[in-house]
Length: 402
Image 1 (cartoon, helix red, strand yellow):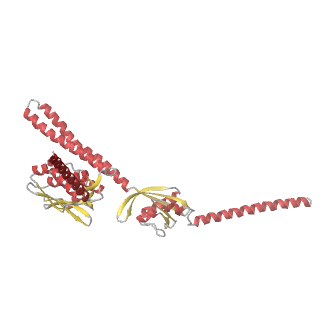
Image 2 (spheres, helix red, strand yellow):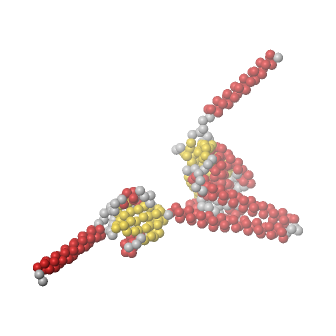
Image 3 (tube, rainbow, N blue to C red):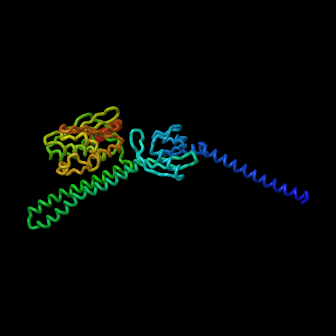
């Protein structure tokens, strides 16, 4: 083997060794980068900006479950940068995501301030040491869905009673066709059940309208005196039939911003409720007071009262504090629910004070507005009066000429 061949062999061996060394160096660099990535807690570029633009609760936590970055709404659930992820349920979700190396989703109950909220939490890894946790509050959605289910169930149950009664009475009338007295008796009861069914249907429609997302359309400056007069007049027949006296007092001339028809119906429902639960010969009081730029409308009775344990439920749909009395008076159990939603749609609130045996007071509180300016109307009326006077003077002059 000559020197040239030896040189070529040496060159080849050197090239192979060089490639091997380069490969080893590349592998070492990649291993170093992978190890650095595994140990790094640096946020990927743009992550913090994305979090700040999110409306949902979102946080990035490291392997020690400390919060590295957080969206603004995260503070509502007590999550701030640099703090430990507090909720054990969320910590378990993050650990599960790291163990399985895939996103994990779970529905949880988390505390926001003093209240528990239903949330859907999703944990997914963004780097080997960082996990993104996104929390979506579904409390309101669940509440609306539960309201819808309850509304359908309760409505079906309430409609079943008068519909069944109408069917039975119709059959009774048919079987008693040869007895005029019985026919008149059953026809009278049939009319009462039909009226009850109509009232229930009307109130269901009104409540559905108040619970709809649409804004009130007939808004104007409403005279509280006008609302109370219409509400009291609408319940005059019922008050007389139950030997109840409606007494009105308090301040006059107050105004609120709202829908006069909706407000009148709400106050009328409070008066009707007071009449239904008051003993014969008693009084129902309706008073108005303006306090701190708010108009307070109070309806007071001296009836049976409501136990403290049931006061929180009286505004629920179809709830009746006294089932037997409601059946006798034909109550639908929707009146106070309509009141609550009507007042809420006007930005107000309704409060209840009650003691068993002493009666109840429902107070509606609405924002007061200034009374409409009356001067232009008087000026216009004065101008009209002067015009009439001028016309009379002109007539008299013409007569004198004749």
